[in-house]
Amino acid sequence: MTRPQRYLIRMILFLVAVGAAAVLLFGQLVDAFAANPALNGLILGVLLIGIINNFRQVIMLNPEVRWIEEFRSDRAPSSDTAPRLLAPMASMLGERENGQFTLSALSTRSLLDGISMRLEEHRDLSRYNIGLLIFLGLLGTFWGLLATVGSVGDVISNLTIGNGGDLSVVFNDLKRGLEAPIAGMGTAFSSSLFGLAGSLALGFLDLQTGQAQNRFYTDLEDWLSSQTRLSSGAFSDTGGDQSVPAFVQALLEQTADSLEKLQRTMTKSEENKNAASNQFMALTSKLGTLTDTMHTEQLLMQKLAEGQLAQKGLLEKIADNSVGGQGGMDEASRSHLRNIDLYAQKLVEEVSNGREETISQLRQEIRLLARTIAAKDS
Image 1: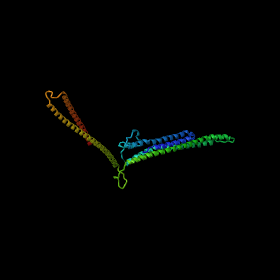
Image 2: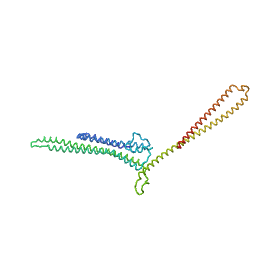
Image 3: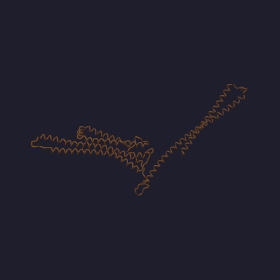
Image 4: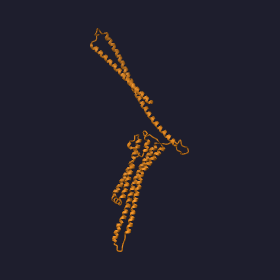
């Protein structure tokens, strides 16, 4: 989508140029404004309102463009960028997931027509302001001409020259009488000047506003056209252009929506299957590790049993060689044998505890596998 900033820059540059020209002609413009401050002030006020309205129309396109960009980029539109021109489309597409949707040709045409009407409604005030400026300029022109004609008539009717009249007095009376027609002419020309100049400036701003709105409408139309689904015409007559019945069109759109939901469901199911497969692979790896651990413990137990058998033979030899109550064995040897016995018991206990812990872990992994299979089946 094209941002409207470049149109705002053109409008600002145009106003800067107009302001520079007004500064250069400031003295003449002040004299022209003083001819009728009330009417000329009204004209400038209407011009100011028109300028603000045109800038507002261009600036208000920014939230609409931002909302479309966020929707197309699969981001959730923020609440502060809620569109106003695109409010019907936002409510229609608000429940779509990940910006994926399709529209029928009729729905697209209806959306574009509604947005076009809203854009035209926003430009009505600007066009009215342009016409109002021209009207106020013409109103001041006719008002000044009426005042001029009436004043000239009064001067002519009051102009008298007697036989012994003084020409200097008559000339001074004529000069005083012509002040009112000149003031009327000043009103006429000054109001025309401000009205036509204002309508010219406002017309350029309205032109830029129209270009910005048309560009926005064109980009929106291109985007919606790429999301439009055309009907195949299978339910229409072969030789004519008869459109699909309304209920058939609604049924087709509902079927298309159901197919889209089914596709999204199948996609999620495939993702769940992939996740389950990864869990199965991880579980298989853990079971392999557990099997290796159990095999290692089995070898350790076998070696421990062999060691005990060897100690049993040694103990039997010691018992055979024992003599009397002491058994031919001193106190250090007996203490050493007791320590060996204690260590052997501890080793047996640790091996037993390790086996129980391994079996517990194996049970947990099997429970997790059963839950995963149950979730997959459901």
